[in-house]
Amino acid sequence: MPDWLIVLLIGTLVGIIPGLFGVGGGFLTVPLLHVFAGVPLHLCVGVSSSQALGPVTTGMLHRHALGKLEWRIGLIMIGGTVVGLLLGIEFLEWATKSAGVWHVFGRDLPGTRIIIPCTNLALLLSLSALVAWEYRHNRTGSGEPERGWLDDWHLPPYVSLPELQGRRASITLLQTIALGIGFLNGGLGMGGAIVMMPALVYLVGVDTHRAITATLVVSWLNSIVGTLRHAWLGNVDLELVCWLLVGGGVGAKFGSWLHDQLSGRHLRGYFSLLILASAGLVAWEIATILW
Image 1: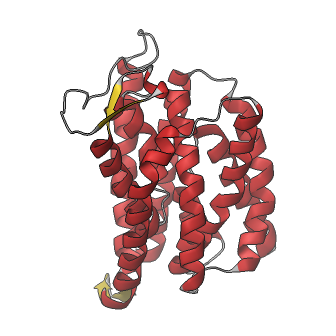
Image 2: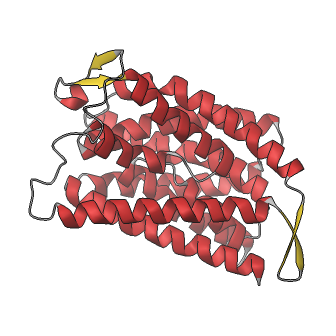
């Protein structure tokens, strides 16, 4: 199969994810490009940030046309995500130069080829277990968590948000979550927004559909900043990005349509399966690296 066709198929598959779940899909783009297209890891991270901009924009336009695009949480969190994103990118640059060479199973490998996939795998497995547990626990309930797990944490200042039906949310908590999301996005290329949707639902108490929309807004803003910074550092291959965008635009449109057909509970259930499948892919990537 030609390399461009592999990349086009990867773009289409990954493009479904932003429209359906609001996340940029970088957690799939990086291992898919590395395993099936043989793209170096530092380029995978930069390209995934650039590619996400296309399908995320398509998903936002779809929600805007339906009158369902809400900006407030995204705008509140953007400062933290940008700072985290830039810190993550600098960490990736430092790690690439400083991690050195590791001797593993009789082979000499760059340290980042071990650190990045193993960290991604641990995080994906933890997220999948959390979302799957909640889906099973709530199978006879109303379908949405009634409150956020950190509602009782008093971290001023506060803001009242329509996404919380007028309840107050801690700006400090939102910014802390945003900082971690940005760092994961810039440093691991896994699309830190994969953490944002469950964090907003379980920690803050945002309705699933609204949490997905807020995640989409933050992913869009992060993709712009990440693309510019990675391009400056030479981590972007324009030909790769173009093929991914062609497939991604088609996938995002289908994902947005599918999103409107599913309940919040079912979206969270399918989200856990997606994360688990991604963890399996990363585990396969680690196996191919080591053996």
